[in-house]
Structure formats: C-alpha cells, structure tokens
Image (tube, rainbow, N blue to C red; front, side):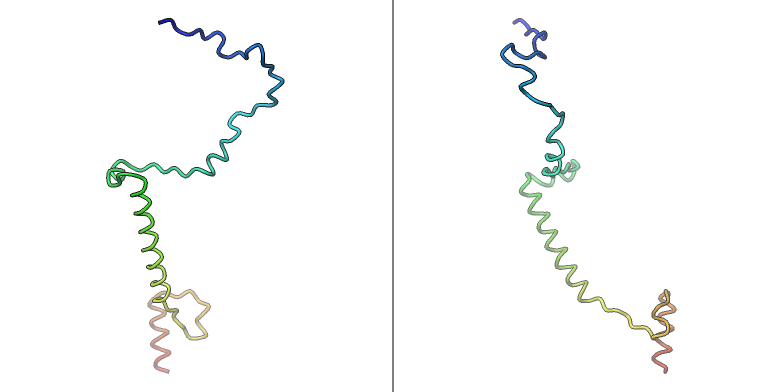
Length: 107
C-alpha cells in the first residue's frame, strides 16, 4: 500500500476560495462546551464500585437526600443561647458563657 501524499492536505481545493469562509476562530465553541459539560474523573478505587453512570447518579442522589434530611434536623435541633443583655455583644468562650449563665440563674 502506498502512503497518501501529505502535500495537498493543507490546501483548499481549486473550487473553493478562502474569502468565502469569513474569519475563522480557533476554539470558537470551546467555552460553551466547557460550560455545558460536567465531566468528572473518578479515581480507580471509586470507579470499581460503580458499574456505570446510572449507578453513580443514583448514589449521589441518595447522598443529597440524606444531606437535606440531616440539614433540616440540625437546623431544628439548634437553639440559640441567650446571654444577659450586657454581654451579648462580646465574644465569649464557653467557660465565660457558663459563668454568665450561672450568675444569671443565681440572680
């Protein structure tokens, strides 16, 4: 088999003119492609755990559900500590807060 000639590979055919094509831009759609594509590379040990993309998506959706549930529980369970009016604007350590609470209970 003969190798194809590389001589004419970079030239336009005679029926085309360069002026017909307008200005060419290298990587014209690269930014749009990058914005629309969300490709993630998994490390080999993680990739072994998932047979395909559907399995990865299912696991991530489950994780999101757990995160939402946990965040709701944490938000409800958290209560703000009310300090005596004088010391609300100060940055206090836990010990100082405990002392302030015990003094407030005594009064």
